[in-house]
Image (tube, one colour):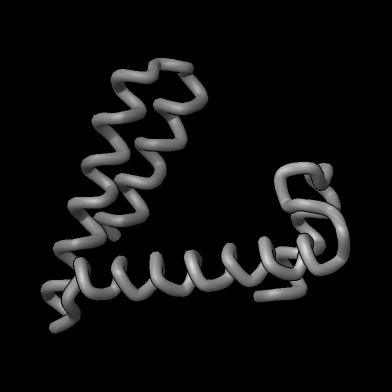
Length: 89
């Protein structure tokens, strides 16, 4: 419930267009998620590190695949990058 509350507050801050408030609410949401993880006997930092490792591996695979197909990743348009990302995911 706290996570839902903090997410709603973040959405409201984004809708209001107040970057300082958005940052504060994002921090509150991250704190609520970390607290939930701790109460669930999970390590939030380890979970985030594993997620970043997966993201990095997928990104590198997308870079290699794009290069192998003849177009560097940074030269693809958004739709092509999204399609490639979904392919390696």
